[in-house]
Amino acid sequence: MANDLQTENQLLRRQLQTLLDEARLNEKKLRRLEQLEKQLIATRSLTELIQVMLQDYKSACDTDAVTLVLADPEYEITRFLEAETRGNAEVPGLVLLEKLYADNVRPYLGAFDPELQGAIFDPWPDGCQSMALLPLMRQDELIGSLNLGSCKAERFAADSGTDFLERLAAIFTICLENALNHERLKLAGLTDPLTGVHNRRYFETRCHAEVAHARRHRLPLACMFLDIDKFKSINDTLRHLAGDEVLRSVARQVKSLLRTNDVVARYGGEEFVVLLPNTAHRYACEVAERIRRTIAAQPLQPLPGERLTVTISIGVAMLPEKLSEDDRTSAQKLVSSADAALYRAKEGGRNRVVCAETGPLAACES
Ligand SMILES: Nc1nc2c(ncn2[C@@H]2O[C@H](COP(=O)(O)OP(=O)(O)OP(=O)(O)O)[C@@H](O)[C@H]2O)c(=O)[nH]1
Image (cartoon, rainbow, N blue to C red):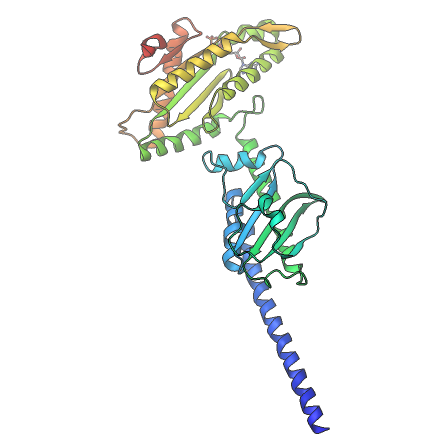
């Protein structure tokens, strides 16, 4: 009898110890997750948020692979990442898809499923044994998934609880929405509402940064000033709304003829300014001439049934190789040189390109 009691006692002690160990482990896990949540909440940009999720979770939470799949139907996330990373939206572990296909929006925990591998990570680490796939939901809509992989089969066992992971996925979703709204607001303050290209405020900050970058890496930097010819008469004859449509069409055409990391901004009125990073003089002149020719060759339709041929004048200037002033002054000088070249193009009869260094384009092509 005494022996039975002793054995039962020992058994209970062992069970209690196991429960205590489990509780301690859970507490540790919770603390690590709380720490990560705080980090996620403290991030100041979309790129930083994604980096913390992909990298810090892995090291903090004993996981061999972390990936994120996000729906990006309008390429909005791609554009935000490109803007933050100077044209490179490729983040290892991040998969952006135009459309998500899922009939099941419940978390999956269990054995590694190679069927899912291609869609959510390329490639998973060798020897992956278990995985967790956590849907990211915003107002009942599936916006992506957070995917975790481990080389240990028991790490994401099918019968383990998902509370911690679901909470992490929910917090990440809120942080993502927050970061996207922040980027949208930032963009609204830096975008010209009429044409959708950047505004002068954005241009000035970016021009300073591009000059600093060009100087540091000894890269060429070109600037173009573009102005629609006789725009006042378009407004006077067709009225302001038609003038607005001409501005929108010209901005669209200019943008379509440039690379994604070139910068286009409306400087004011009917003037646009363009920065061409890492672009040599000859190529900058070619681009300017292509823009001038394309716009002159394609009549616009500023009002229904109204066709109108518009021409533009362009001034091009290069950042000098040897700079004696600080970056801000050099940026201002670059813009003024392009503006002065534009003035010469207007003086020379409009619908032409003038380069600050070589004069009217015929001279720079020869
Ligand atoms: N529709 C419209 N017109 C604008 C806007 N901003 C400025 N303008 C007009 O743009 C015209 C600019 O005229 P000017 O500076 O005389 O230049 P221009 O007629 O293009 O002549 P050149 O540049 O010498 O070829 C003015 O009539 C402004 O009122 C705008 O947002 N929308």
